[in-house]
Length: 240
Image 1 (cartoon, rainbow, N blue to C red):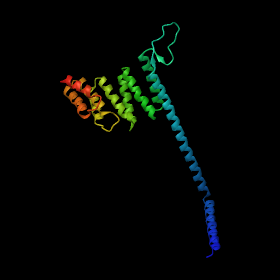
Image 2 (cartoon, rainbow, N blue to C red):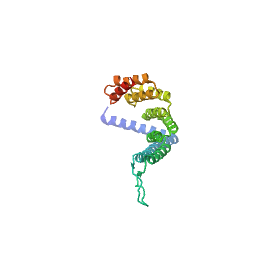
Image 3 (cartoon, helix red, strand yellow):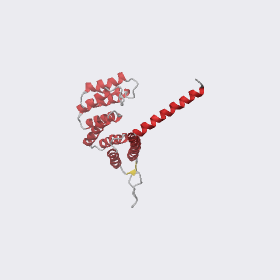
Image 4 (cartoon, rainbow, N blue to C red):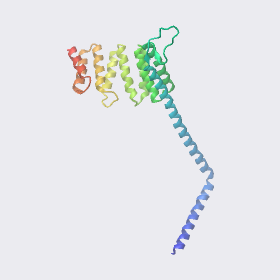
C-alpha cells in the first residue's frame, strides 16, 4: 500500500472517530453538562474548605499566641505616683496575670475547639487553673482535653496534668493509676523517667513507702542516664 493511501485511510479513521465522539456528545449533552457543573462545584467546595480551614487555624493560632504572651507578661508593681497607670502589657501580681491568661486561653479554646491550637489552649487553661488552686475546674478541663485529643500529644499531656491535679486534691489512688498507665507507654509522648518520678513522689505522699522506693529504683535501674537519677537515689536513701 502506498504511503499516500495509508495517510488517506488514517485521515478517514480520524474523521470517523471525531464524528462518533461528536454524535455521542450531542446525544448525552445534558448529562455531560451536569457532570462538568458538578466537577466545578466540587472543586469550588474543596477550595473553599481549604481556605476556610486555613483561615480558622490562623485565627486559632493568633488567639493562642496572644494568650501565651499574656501568660509570659512581666510582673511590675503598680505605680505609686498618683494618677499613673499600670504599664501596658504588664501585671501588678502573679495572680492578676494568671487570671488574665486563663481568660485568654479559655476564649481561644472556646472559639476554636477543633483546632490544634484550640486544644493546646484548653490544656494550658487547665494548668493555670491548677496554679490558681481551682482544682475541680482544672480536673474537668483536663478530662475534656483527654476526650477530644485523639492521637494528639495533648491527650497524654492532659492525663499528666489530671494526675497532678488529683494528687493535689489528695486523691492519690486515682493519681497513681494515671501515672502507672502513662509509665507503661514506652513509645508515648512523655518521658517515662519523668512520669516514674511523679509516680514515686505520689506514692510517698500517700504514705506508700515501699512502692515509692520501688518507683525511684526503676528510674535508677532503667534510665541510668536520666537527669533524675541523682534525686531518685537521694529519695531512696531518705525512704530507707
